[in-house]
Length: 411
Image (cartoon, rainbow, N blue to C red):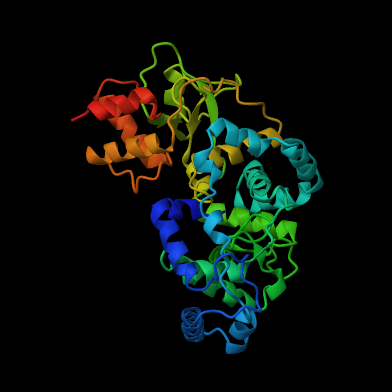
């Protein structure tokens, strides 16, 4: 889901739960299943919809479009639970990857990339985006179009906007969805998707549809719901628009030499090769381009060199687990092998409360890790690497019980 996780990670889950429960309590009778159209909304919700109608008018959305889209819509309480389910930040990365590329997803992707060979080749030529990454996103987001979401996008966006989840973000997404309807680019019934309003084969938010959706097959329409060439081209256009560099790989698994200086972080591929870093699959490193070391599970697990294109994948979803799953799935679809190093599954792992403590203690030492939420993202990893380097530990950015003890002792 495009950039959504990156935006939501800044909000305390506990505060979010409180806001949602209290706000929805005003409109949802206790003990009932999710509200349906025939149930009467509260006066607060009615005023909210009236305010939305005025804003839509100021944006040039026709009143008839607004009224047809919002007729009978009431808040959906199921978003309360769904806002908390972000497995890419909660599961161990090896479990997330296993789920992401398992279940026949590689084999199905290989069949589909052959079926759609002409369409994906045209998109790759037009935008310069690796076909494997496009297929990785397609597979991860909707299992190649099989699971695009059955939520009413308008109702989901109204519900999240009403309770103020993530400020004005969902209110603006609702306006973008209404503009899609007003321009006739989709019918009301077609706007089905995820709980957060992501739609189509590769799960575009409405604002991203407006900006990045393109006609991939020349039929004069932008259809990310049922037209696979359009979905390919729109996804590629999104990635290219966020800085994708044609010809640069996303990265690769590597093996470090004995005695390697882990303080090194970023260098050109040629420099990494001179330092004895080699690809795990035995192929040579690229001759051009920059990359940095990435330890998704610490120095005892698989280690990768990742490039700026890996960061572009994270613009789709800010989770390292997601980006690595997309990239690895794409490689496997194109015939690449599995990750070769073993994951440190038997090593002790920190629980949620301990991960929050790691972030709080890093923040107390002056590091910017964002809101402590227990989700170990790039800012937390880089802060921990800096702490480890300054305190004489191997700087891999991996939060272990030993590192938590070191943070507790730090002054």
